[in-house]
Figure (cartoon, rainbow, N blue to C red):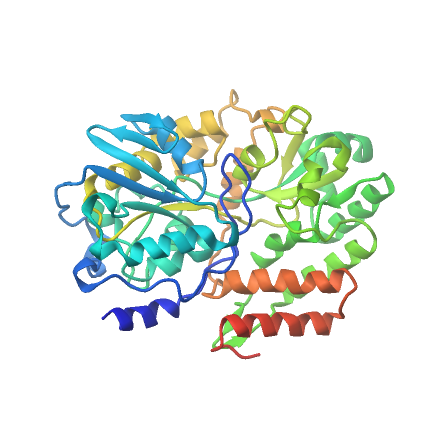
Length: 475
């Protein structure tokens, strides 16, 4: 059974071009997973079969017997949510805490060089033979590689932890779609939604556009032609429109009309080519750069001397990744604003999954329900952390709350924009190869943008890279 399940699992590549849901410190985009790293657990550790009944109603949950709750994640974001918002959690030290008489152990491995997934894979492979107190109970995944774990037997349906359809009824549908397996079973939940906006430098807007009011700035970025014209105006005033060409990539890639892979053929959508054309023009004009996301050159624009007009991102980028704690940053001074930008898009997200073999299914289920389904906790997270939470009524309430504002955005309440954007998220053109294709395409096009290759040569580099990762594909 192991070999059969391994073959099935390895056919699942990464889903959706979404980056890391950023925590208190920025992380790099997760590289493509090591396809050979994961195989399914032994028969005696297999997840319950996912069927329609599992989706419709909760199954009976076995009594918890575990004395240790092992949590695997890649940064401090989820830890801070649990520490700050889960009733009854007591922190012992940086890697330990307690919930009642259960010890909580945090296993945090950064995503750099795929280290998190590699560590998680190795541990899950040993899950069936591990001592009870060493078993993984709960782990986190991102949309980019969710199917690797969800569409296999490493994850339990949330119904096996006591989470019902009624519990998740107010969550945004796309957050459920990302972690629903091929049999229709929901295999994870998230406390956040990640619709994106255009985040602009208020001082630059006032200087160059004459106003930092979101409605006025929106007029200057309302579509891509207007955005490009404004980029030229910003360049004349000494600002880059974006720090790097890759800043706008996700907006284009989230608005494609076809998949990266059709059948077994690699496909470059017309909207992806439109991004290439615009990006090349802007790079050649000095209106943007070619640095990688999360690099020092990219984040230089978080400070006034970086002279960058805008970034594209969701709520987590604004408050957790734009150096708000640095006294000389734009964010610390409340110097950013938000408007819709040329097109809606989404980026990132973090999902809580229950590991097959956990002996704390009830506790894992309660964590899921408290941190993703409890409206009081949801509103508490918005007010304390400025996160966009995965609960439609809570977000609509906070969007209408005149007393709420994000200090990084100069007190602006941008939640209405996020609420509008999340309703437009469409996952119909995702494919199982998205992460590998997105990363390889951006890397190859950098050669073109930097003048080291023609477009055709860069495209060939892309095709070669992807087919090396996925030999079953052609172009």
